[in-house]
Amino acid sequence: MLEDQNIQSLDDAMRTVPGVTVEPGSTGGNHGNFYLRGYAVDTVQIDGVNTPASTGNDLSSGFGMAMYDRIEVLRGPAGLFQGAGDPGGSINLVRKRPKAQREFSTQLSAGSWNRYYAEADMSGPLSSDGRIRGRLVTAYQDQGSFVDHVYSRKPLIYGVLEADLTPSSTLTAGASHQQYKGRPAFGLPAYPDGRLLDIPRSSYLDPIWNHITERNTEYFAEFQNRLDNGGQIKLNATYREQDEPSRLFGWSDCAADPATGDSCLISWAYRSHWKTHGLDGFITTPFAALGSSNNELTLGADYRKVHKSFKYGGGDGAPINIFDPDNNVPKPANYSFSNGNDNRTEQYGLYGRINLRPASGVLLSMGGRMTWWDNHAVNRNAYFNQFSETDTRISGKFTPYAGVVFDLSEQLSAYASYTRIFAPQTASDAEGMTLRPRVGQQYEAGLKGEWLNKLLNARAAVFRMEDSNRAMTDPANPLFSLAAGKMRSQGVEAEINGRIAPGWNLAVGYAYTQTKTLEGTPDEKAQLYTFIAPRHSFNLWTRYQFGSGPLEGFSVGGGLRSVSRMYRLNGDVKFSQGPVTTAALQIGYRFNKNLDATLTVNNVFDKVYYQRVWAAYGSNYYGEPRNVMLTLRGKF
Image 1: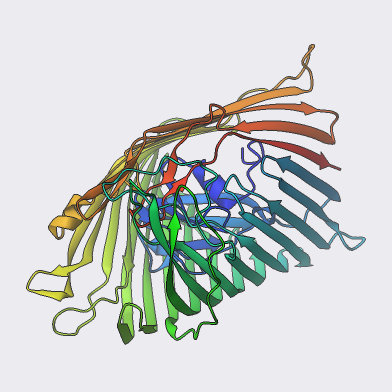
Image 2 (image 1 turned 30 degrees about the horizontal axis):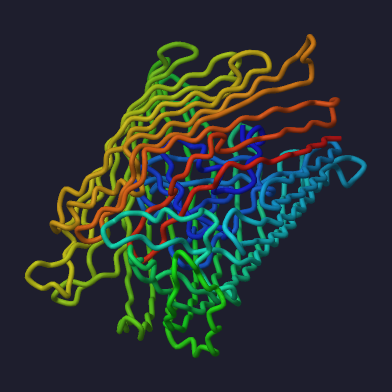
């Protein structure tokens, strides 16, 4: 389905998932922030190995879609295999692997605002006996934007080798390198009373000298041994280095005056550097018990080390007018980079899961994890007068998991599950003690079905998630915190994906999400989190390929995305947007078995809307106007 929709970024891919909110960090930038069931996704797994997914103004993750075969989304706490993190869920990106037969594919795209994309993918055996295989992927993206002066350039290269050491064991190793260079826009201000600006969507209020340069390099290896009894042993290792040597930018920092249009911007210079080491190893083996030989035991261990160095300087202000912006703001002098933080985190984990079949059509799943987590953080923030050095350690934190599946028929099953996760905190109480970790837990039940030889899949679920021990302001000591906050997220999700008839693909999903702060300050209780979790969201995409007759070779497709009202409270002022529905249409033609083309029109009715609302001082983003993309694909 992602290929049908010409998806070229992780942001766009996540927008197709029911219940997921993508919050842009900029227009024309390299990443957005993802939210599942109302919570930020702080970890992205790559082939099951945890990698941090940054949020806010830190270094972006830079996950180029050309490298990945598919995306897997786990909704709800993923503590069993993730360890520490937020309870909303996790994203697993599965890398492309070498193929046994020689294949070559290419993609060329061109669209509105001078957007261009090229990709080449080569795979096949490298030895005469086929025991050594390789794959090489290259991609280049050069894009303008509907916002004036905004551009981005993203080259990517990915290579992987695979060798069969024995008939039952395989060694895989590879590397990737991505770059980003561009001039993003960091949103618009709003009026003090909460009204959003009604100015051209092309308006660029930031300085003309805005620029960001990023580099992401990754090395990985995997060893897999297939056991004679049907089990397996797998070892994964990943090293990822993310570097941002230059980020110089200004953005809106004042509410806009309704009468004059006057506002202001503030300029900063950032430098970021991340290093991530990840290891994961497990053994899975079947065993006989309770009258069944299809039981399964999994035992594993993992390790993650993350070092983030972040430096910045700046804070210089300048006037800007929303109706007549002068982007030629004087470029600031060299900054001292005296502000920033240094953060080092290590996590060790042992986990296990057992799947039992006590009766025909019944699967019981139980598991648990022990986690050791250490963090050393140094914060130097003269601009906000914040200086601290903290050490946080969590030893032997147990995380349980349980689930049950009942087969109602050959195609339909019912399930229920309980999952938990924890998230360390750095805030302190009035006695100087670091707050105990947040604990997220979820109860979920639902139905899953597979039809038409597993070509059509469906699921429906209800869930309730609670996040307790959240840091909240201590009423008796306002400069300190209490681990007494509590938030609830609950809802319903349903989706259908796959082929419903020969040549006809469908992906449709609906999510209802209700979030509420149960325990907290009055301001925290008033903030219902609907700015990151709309109450209702609906996604639809369908495509039909004509197989015979006068329209043979042609295809038609289209989709809808609809979200209910989203808002954010900033003090007593509400900034809101929605409800919003956008539509897309597509027509395609397959010239032969090797070559096809599609023309896609997004936001067909040119809906004017904000895809993110935040505050009067800024960070409010228009959604894309109507645009077109022509894509040519070849497979040989």
